[in-house]
Image (cartoon, rainbow, N blue to C red; front, side, top):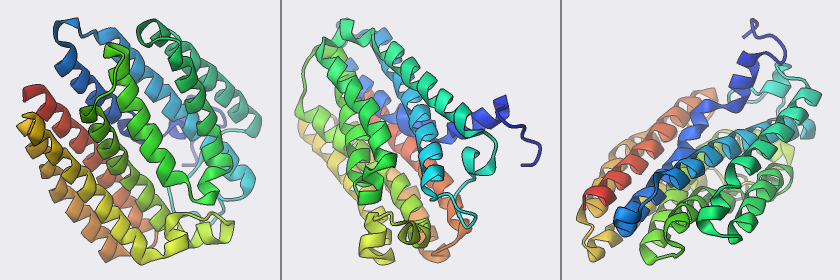
Length: 296
């Protein structure tokens, strides 16, 4: 992309990685569906919209942080297999990216502030954790192999649970199951990333699960994450949300197809095609579970 001017609007758009925003939207959709079922006529759309906007901005913030610090650590080398990064390509200067991170961090905090009115002062702590771990993930924890745990927490438990919490100030088993299932299915995106980058990550000292346990574990992990997410949804049959138990099982079809593609390709840049498939599948899972909860 030689036509990209340094620090241009196009450069920032690419650095924001808009394709990753589906992973931010899905947990809020699911949490909102659960809240809509339980709150009934007292359901409020505004806090859900605020949660969605906060999730979007925090995702972009995390992408900027990841772009800057992976470049600073030397992880974004010329042999990188994944999509090109803004700092490594010179699309955005280091100083500009630092300012961008400061702006998106403050913007996310500003957007999230009104949620205190709906969810209480305890949401300040939740916001602080989100911002803190957005930095810690790239700076330290992903290099120690904690990435998958953080994805399940901050793309599952936290957004699903606290989107629901802003409506009803409570937490149920239905919320917990949905939150864990959501975190597991979104972790498939990280798993295929780490599977593709296993050789480069080993050189960079990034001890992901795939680096620690090997490529076979990565392939099996990808499959197992999606299967567990779908199987967890069967729980909703016990609460008479039969469609919420049935519809997410449809997700398994494209998930198996993506897994087969991983096995067939095995390594190299061609695995980037599976990233697109996985992002689409995550969104499909979220839509299916959301619809299932709403119509049950």
